[in-house]
Each structure stands twice: as structure tokens, then as C-alpha cells.
Length: 142
Image (cartoon, rainbow, N blue to C red; front, side, top):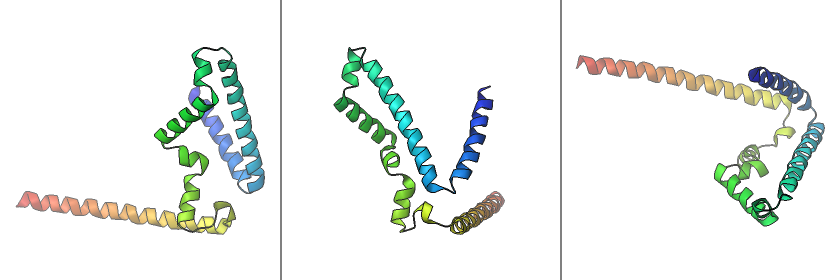
């Protein structure tokens, strides 16, 4: 049952992402709105828990919440990726265009190049394995 639900949402996600990827501004509004709804729900839930008083009121106070979130995000390695994103940093380091500024043909060309590189690496792995087998055969004969 759980696998069926996951598969269902995975298919929907693929279809929506494919359609929205051609309309970056609409995609940003949809994603931004959904993100705001998520955090609004989380915020109100924590406010309700905080309203119970006791330890919850202390743990969910603004300064403690901020400190805890920073510690957790840094410890999990998500701090930079949540606020900036790895792709933005990498494209900046490589002095590339932003992904939404690239044309579809540039993206396809990049995908093709990555595929060719993967094929070359796979071939090198096979060659290395063959050389290793030959070397082991020589060791046995010595």
C-alpha cells in the first residue's frame, strides 16, 4: 500500500515537474506558495504546542528556535543547501549561466556530455578490471 502511494506521487511529481520546468516563473510561484503554506502550517502547529506551556514554551521561544535550527542545519550539512543550493554555488564557481537561463539545447548538450563521460568512466572501470585479472594471473604463475 505504502509503495503504491509513493509510486503514485512520484509519477505525479514527474509530470508536474516536466510541465512546470518550461515555465520558470510560474514554477517559482507554485513552489513558493506551497513552501509558504507548509511553513505557515508548521508555525501554527508549533504555536499550538507552545501554548501548552512548560518546557515547550522554552524550547519554542524565538531565540532558542533559531539557535536549535542553525545547529541542526549545520550538523546535517543542510544549512547552505537550504538557503542557497549546491547548484547555485557550483554554477557560480564555474562561472556558468543560471540553470533557468540555459536553453533547452544547452541542457541537452550538457546531458549528452555527461552521458559520454559516464560511458568513458565505465569503459575505464572495465579496462581496469581486465588489467587486474591479468595481473592476478601473472602473480599465480610466478
